[in-house]
Image 1 (spheres, rainbow, N blue to C red):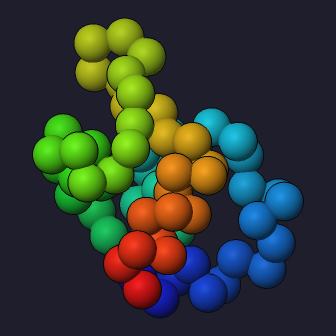
Image 2 (image 1 turned 135 degrees about the vertical axis):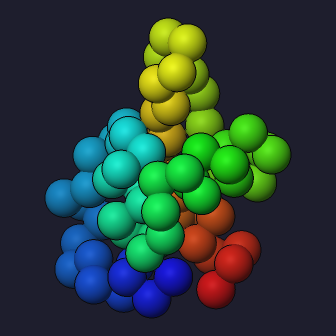
Amino acid sequence: MNNNQSINSWEKVPVILNASQVALILGISESTVKRLARKGELSAFKAGEKIWRFEKRSLKNYIERNS
């Protein structure tokens, strides 16, 4: 999860992110991001049947809890 250190400014991160964006920030695979969401470890919501969306503040909270 060291990739979050490469974020120079959270202001530039979108308020709502997709799974691939979250995966890039966390330095993990998209399937792992989705698994964390299904397990409730990473707060997310579904936009349709298969499309996961993540709020920036939830992602920041996840990073703080797991750093």
